[in-house]
Image (cartoon, rainbow, N blue to C red; front, side, top):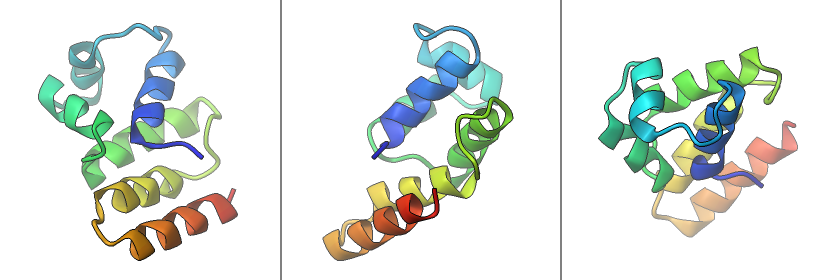
Length: 94
């Protein structure tokens, strides 16, 4: 199961540079470097999830952008039951 940090890494790889800096990815997505760093730490906003999901869908890495958004919600939610339910839903849809 992927987490937010893995989606960020996948977006960098999809854009052609697995070693791309957070600053460069942020510039590509029109977000600040700190926003990308927060996303990797499990605090990915819906806007960042949408932007990363669009990159991943365009490159055939995810079937649906909603997968990234659901995982971002799950990582941000403090209630373990809600987190598990959202993650199960995201991966059942694959």
